Length: 312
Image: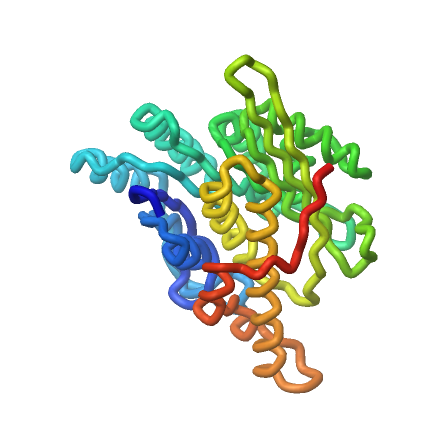
């Protein structure tokens, strides 16, 4: 990799397992990035387990950590990465930090996964407090460069429902208009041409050329559904998308193919291993379904392309 590339990743930390920073740091390091982590929480494990314990970092504590970096003049970053947050003041502080870092380095790229909720059986519901939506919509997305909402989150941010691919493309255009030049809708309930066992993801990259003309590249991907509830997949996705868009800055197609393919390799390895651990006929539990991150090192570094993108 060219001169060192530094990522400030502000996400959750778990002692055991792979979500938040635990899901993002290893892939980024393997792909050659320096990763500085701020742990927005420190929990024993993710909250999908029967029990969890731990501490939460508040916005003042986040600010204090950032001040320490600033005093030592080591607050120059190439990327900022954020994911799941539950607190509006914490999120607002993240925005302040991103804006200040962008003054330090005008080329800084902010990759934001606007985690708010998801759809189950077609019904969307938020799993963060409702008051986070206006903060994401009015403060966070406008300073973001790459966003990775799922369909439900894209609908929340734009106030518009997606029923067709055309709707989705229009929603992505609305999101571009809010700020980010790269938008990836990571999952949707749109009908896949390959059938119901496939999930559709859509990507859109809008570049403004020197002469003021805009070019938009749009892609669609269909990847096999994996029959299990994984945690940390969104965090892994955003981290790998950061890495691959860095390595292929003007080719969203290749960046997404590598990201989604690596994702598939990790999920397939995880489900296979989880089923073996659970034993015949038993449903794997949370501990067994933790992502097989270390075991997937080679797939993360150099993914064999098993999911191709269609240019729209």
